[in-house]
Length: 96
Image (cartoon, rainbow, N blue to C red):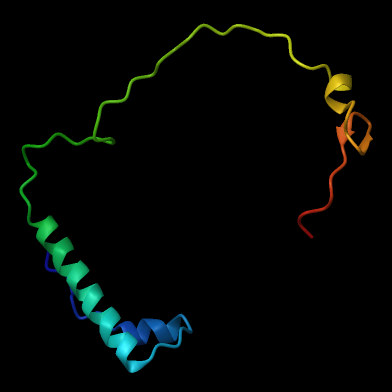
């Protein structure tokens, strides 16, 4: 499958409402064209002998025994909180 290397950076910039000068558009056009040419070279590489993999290196789960530990009680965790209500930390509102 041949890639379409005629990608109009100016058109996409207008769609995205990005103001590019003529020089910037030409520079980005060349850079994008170079990237697309490289991707096309990668598409032509013969990888039929390579087994598909999700990772470059094999990944194995490393299991360990779960051990319970004594941690803070709710009262201890809240003991230094400047503001608390009903066993919960009260923090400043972040999202409106």
